[in-house]
Figure (cartoon, rainbow, N blue to C red):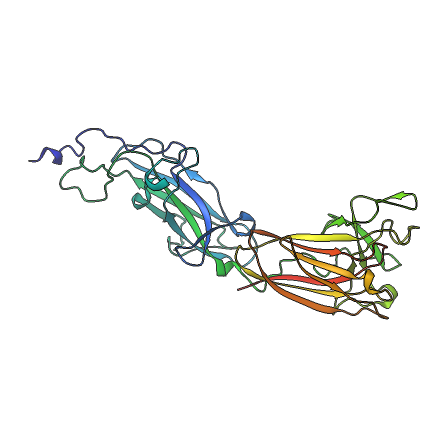
Length: 370
C-alpha cells in the first residue's frame, strides 16, 4: 500500500494566505464579463457590508468560511446582479506578492452560496430590491493540498506551491440596468422650490437652501456697491410671474442668473450680482447623457445683459445670447455628452453685464441615454 494513502501529506506544508487581505469584495459595472469598470458607490443602488475577508495562515485540508451581505440602498424597482471572480492584483506595498503582479489564484477553491431562506439567488442570477433588501452569501474555502504532498487517490484541485493567495469577488451589475432614461438626474430643474411668496413675485435664496438643489457662487463683479458689501453666501433669484413674464411651459417659476444682493424689500438697484449655479450629477463613466435646458433673455434688456454659459464636466459646451422682447422668449437647448467620471458637474454662468439684470433659465434636465 502506498504510504501516501494513509498520510495525505508527506509533511505539514503550509499554504500561506495574507493576513490582511484574502478576498477583496468590490462592485463593478460591466457591459460584458471581461470589461470591468470601477464605479463610485454614489451611483450604485447596492452596497457590500465588508471590503475584505481574511483567513490568515491556513493549512491544506482546513475548511473555512466567511460571509458578506449585499444590501439594496435606494428607491426603484431593484437591481439584478451576479457574483464573479477576478485575479487579485498585488498591493503597491508588495508588488511581487505573486506571478505577474497578482496573488497566486485562490478563486478556483471558493464556493459562494446564498443562505437566505426562500430565495433562489445564485451566483449568476441574484436580485435585491424594495421587498428583498439584503442577500447573505457564505464563502466556503476548502484549503487545497500542495502538489507533491497529496495521496494518489486524491480527487480535486491542488496548488503548485505555498505562498500568498488571493481572489477578488465582485458584485457585477449590468451598466444598462443602471442607465434609466426615465430617471431625472437634476434636482429642482424647474426652480419650483422654494415657492416665491413675496408680493413682488420674486425673491432671493441662499446657496444650499433646503430643497433648492443648486449651489450658487458669485461670478465676477465688484464685492462692494454703494457702500454695501456683497453678501455671502451667494443668492439665486427666482421669479413667479413678475410683470406677467411667463416661465417655460407649465412651470410656475424660473431663475435669473444676474440676481440681487438684498432682495425685493432692499434698496439696491443695479448691483453686480452675476452668479454661476451648479449641481454635481451622479454619472456612469463612458455613458452618454442628454442635457436639456430652456433659456430666455430678460424682457426689455439687450443682448449684452443676456449671455448664458453652459458647462459639462468642467468644459464649456455652449454660450447662448439674445436680446429681450416684451415678454420671455424661451428657446430649447439640447445636447448629448458623455461622462468620464462618476460625478459630472452641470454648471450655468451669467457672462453678461453684472448689473442685477440677466438671463433666465428654466426646466433643466439630465437623463441617461441607454
